[in-house]
Each structure stands twice: as structure tokens, then as C-alpha cells.
Length: 414
Image: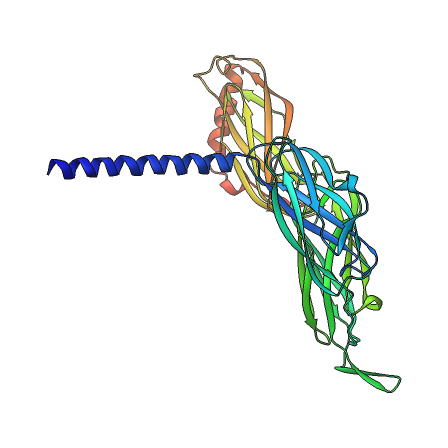
């Protein structure tokens, strides 16, 4: 019996040791730098035999730590070769968690190459003394042509959010449509089908400050006459992106070279936000007040989950935070808070003077949470004479009979 107990105890501690090793390994993996590699553009696609190919490679740090000195190494094999051996390794430098960087490589496709799919290896490392990590990608060689005569056109563009703020992430969804109306068309006495093929579609930013997080779409299939397809691209606007209209280029590879097209896709960036403005004097009388604010959405599109939170040292507000919810562009709300001196605070015990007050607005633009603060507001604290106090007390009795709907109200600007 004692021997069995000893073996059970030994097995138990062995399991604990194994679990701790796996836990520490998992923790280290989560906390370390980790690089994700994507080919975001192949130009031209498919690669043309006997010509140069531009390969745009994106590296994203999806780990929890900073990568100190990132290198990208491309390992070409026949039929690919680099334009220069000096360009085999390109350095990105430091890459913080969640950040991306792109590099371009120029490859030559041998003139004797055969049509088909060939592979290429791309290696990355997080620092000069760190090991290389390798991933293999497939590249198509040879232009595919089809006798189909359907034409792919851009039918719709939808951005979410409609207007981005600096630092926002969101999506751009494009709808591509085959504009043919009949199943066949006769050209020079020969009949052709009017199907349209999307061999590739890539969204590429044309200005600094915006990034496309998706790899290109390849081999999206066949669209019959009048059919359409939606392609969604994840995009990110940098914190320091300029305001105004940014443009992407949507490059579409169609049935053949004659059916390839490039479309301009606009994206608007605007930093205007929620404005909070006092609509009557901010004044505490004998430690009490009702403070009132106009809240306006100055952004070009609807903002959601809007809430307002006032703060002042030595003063309590009721409610502590006012939740408005969605606000259309140019919509105006008027809200009120009851303010009361906090007697437990030394600042709150002062009978007169002013207290610095801030009002913070929180809201969502699409999936992005934002916050801005109206500061440098002075909440004046006054004392009243006994006669004034009596008048205020009488007014308070009368106010009891005023319906609550008149105390908190909503007003829209038309």
C-alpha cells in the first residue's frame, strides 16, 4: 500500500512539472516577437515568362514583444532569380507589436520557364542573432487567357466606418459585377460566352498613412452575365495620417490582358469628433448645482455608444456618466448633471473659489473606441445670503411639480 501511495505521489508531481514546463513555454511564445509574412501583391499576375516580377511582401509583428531588428530574406529557385544578389536580404529594423512593414523584391522569370505553379521560400528573423523562420509560397507563371467576353466593372464601394479617424481600423468592400446582359455574344460571325473571370484582385494604397492588411484575392472564379461578387479588404489608418481623401488602386486581372483594369477607391479621413460645450454658467451655490452641456457630433458620419463623464476634484456628479447612445452627424443633445460638494474632500469643504473641471466624451467610430476631453473648465463655488437661500428653497418646492421630462431633454439640430 505504501509503495502504491509513493508511486501516485511521484506521478502527481511529474505531471505538475510537465504542466509547468508547457505553461512557461506557452507564456514565452505569447510574450515574444512573432512575425507573420504575406505576399500582398504580385505584379504582374500571373508572372510573365522572360520578364521581371515585382513581389511586395508584408511583415506583421503578431507577438507580444518588440522585434528589435527584422530582416527579410528571399530564396529564389529556378525559374526565378533576383535582379541583384545584394538584394537577397532586406532590413526593416525595429517592429513593434501590431505593426506592419512592406518590402519589394524584383525577380526575373527565366525565358525558358514553363507555365504552371512554382514555389518560392521567404525567410524572416527578429534580430541578427535570432534563427531564421521560413515559409513557402506558390507563384503562378504564364498568362492565362480565356475566350469569354464578359467584362468586370466596379459596381459599389462601401467603407466601414464611412469616414475614418486617424488610428482607425475598418473595412473597404467593393462589389464587382459582370456587365454582360446576354449569355452569348457574336463577334465577326463567331459566338462567345459572356462569362467573366476574376483571376486576381488586389487593393494597394497610393498614399502614405494607410495600410491594407489583406493578401490579394486569387482565382475568384467565374461570374455569369449580371452576376456580382463582394470583396472585403481590412485597412488601417495611421495615427499621423493626414486628413482628407486618400486613394487606393484596385487592380483586377480579368479574362485576359485586354480585360484587366485598375480602379480608384477613395477613403476619407476626418478627425472631427464629439464636442461638449457648457450651455449655462458652471456654478455651485451652497455646494449644489445643476450643470448643463450641449453635446454635438461634428464627425461626418454616425458615432455610436456616446457617453459623457464630468469630473472635478471635491465634487460628485449624478449620474456619474450620461449615456446618449448613437448620434447622427450634426446631431445635438442637451444633457444635465446634478453636482454636489463632496464633504469628505478638503477641496469640497471650501465655500467659495473655483474648481478645475473636465468633461470626457467616449464614443465608437465603427469598431474603434475613441475618447476626447474638454478641459480647463472652471466650476465656480459661491455662498448665498439667507434671503437668497429662502428664495431658492421656495423655487425648489415649486420645481418638485415640474415633470422630469423638462429637466433632461433632447434637442436635434435641423
